[in-house]
Length: 119
Image (tube, rainbow, N blue to C red):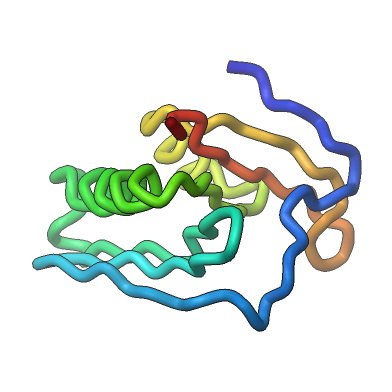
């Protein structure tokens, strides 16, 4: 799957004041997201070091995707282009990569992974 290049435009720009922060917790991990009017941004995912590589992160993201499909919202996550571990993880979940050059601090390239499984 080849990344799409949006130039340096950030495609999700709605009012942050309308965002609602929610955390999903499970034994060994947690996921935090901002639910907005049109979409949902996965802002943090954490799995205890001794619990990693056991599917906890995948299950947390699957639960988030399930919840957002019910309300017809697209899930996306922003990461640094240089964060290889995160990129491999999100790619393994079938999220669609989008490149945004120079979006982050000091001109660092960003990757946005978008859930294309929306109904």
